[in-house]
Image 1 (cartoon, rainbow, N blue to C red):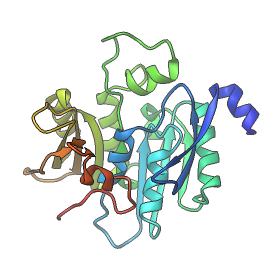
Image 2: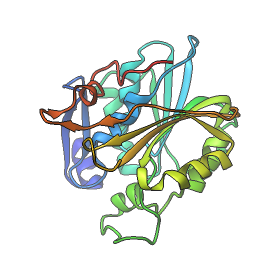
Image 3: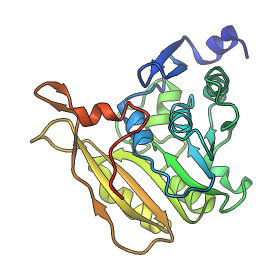
Length: 257
């Protein structure tokens, strides 16, 4: 697909530098774009196996999370991104090739609700940034791509965990970022899908304010027991906190196993 064809399919597109220029990303000017949540999700992922890890991303949009992970884990890592919107998947395909990540990153235009078309238990890990809003609640965006990505018009939490339960192998790892005010609902859906929360970290705009997001790592078939990690603050008196800025480095967020 040419740049002109992409522009016609997705509206105006921009080519932006991510992770201090390490990643170049074509993305729609209006619609799903990389934000702090995207970067934090990729920075939160950890590999625990020295063997090759095969991941899947649900709702990969223009491929940012999958591509960031491939940059962070250049050896023994592959990831398949599933995206329902063909115009976004086309941009993702271009991004993987222009960033020379075609050997480790793959994209497929697919509705995650059709997950049974893929082999059960095929993946060591799964990453997802689910739509934050419930369908039918709040003001619906007139832009369909935003409605799909953020307002659950094609994907519910139930859909996410049905797909994750099917796609992950036993003891496979699950990583997500989500809204803090829906934590209880999310974790209930997670355990209902057979995935036990093992690490949980809340993200606060500033000290003294309410958490806006949380990051979670789960384990399919894991036993009970989880760790609530220290809070992550976005801002302090000097601007962005040093720890938040580490999410934009290839090493990702600090982690103690």
